[in-house]
Length: 419
Ligand code: NAD
Image 1 (cartoon, rainbow, N blue to C red):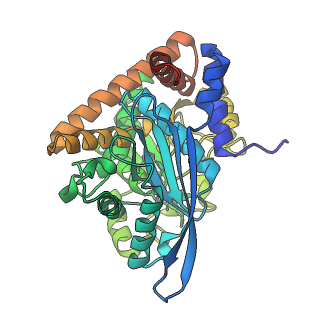
Image 2: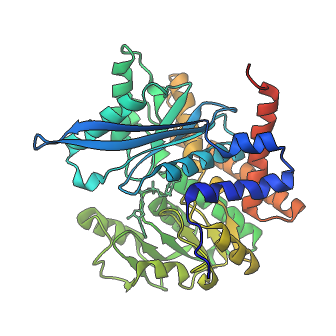
Image 3: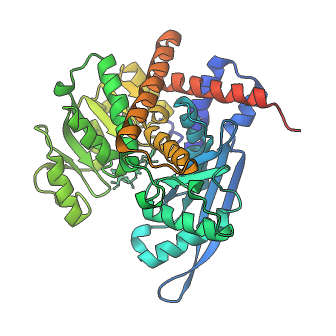
């Protein structure tokens, strides 16, 4: 069998093309929208604690800002590469459009393993990277946020560096996902997981499943996965499997999430958790019997190699790009309903948008405000995608792309071509 193409940027372009074909998009728009506006690649020195100097590589890719400032997270990982960041940046453009917030799409990353850096080294890497990209970011230009291995503390260092760099201009809106005491917003940490839960519940309703009879498996028990699991459990769904990079655990009778969280607060990783069966290799968790599967770890997890073995009836993509186009075809044939990443995980960027509005207005919204407004945005985006999918007889991913591309194209045509 031919080896499947797992290049995330080429996958993003294939997904785009599928919808662009149906929309009969003009050639110049295809060429414009398939590639990022700008790819910044930086290499910078950082002083390590032992006095040595290490060179780090980083990226900031700005895909499209037709509908609003570029927007997207910063990922710290040894595997980060330009094509991954370009894919993630373009997915941000479609995500912000599908959920209808006035942002474009961008993404960034630094090639590093934060677990091998001391807090002081992590701070110096963050500050120097912020300096390197500071010429192209700003509250009305490009607004980073957390992603894999980055958090509120890292965002705080970014804000501080950016403000220092800009003559002390107090620019809280330059990044989102900040600590509450520094212009952060209530509910941001759980926002992506909450969006996953909201769209999963809409799909469960659409598929006429009963929430208290639904079982769920969540791959990747990090920010997105753990909040998704907790919030789904609050809706009566039984969580029977979760995994992280160290292992996968499964118990068809249901997992005790509070007990898992207590274990994690001491042990950091799920490895060694005593009250469930450990699945090896951990990737097999995706193939276990369950109604709902939430991939919430990383790209290319459901491929032509395992799509046929997936038993779930419903997949809600917490991660970006967890399913390859080849796997999509197999899942469609098997009539497995997929809520695509650009819709399912858009809760995070939606609440980031609320945070940015809050910063501009120098306001502090309440948790209840955030939940109510997020719910309204996600439900209406889900409904629009689901209605179009039915009308055009296409899968949910293609429908989401069609809506998103339509919005960006409309704005592009109104703006016209400069000069
Ligand atoms: P995170 O670092 O908090 O969590 C990632 C989790 O996945 C960790 O538990 C890690 O151990 C686990 N993991 C890594 N490799 C794994 C593997 N091979 N098998 C099983 N588990 C594995 O990151 P996050 O912020 O939760 O992001 C997860 C995904 O969601 C990414 O694709 C990210 O781009 C996407 N996403 C995140 C946000 C957000 O707001 N954080 C928003 C939208 C999309």
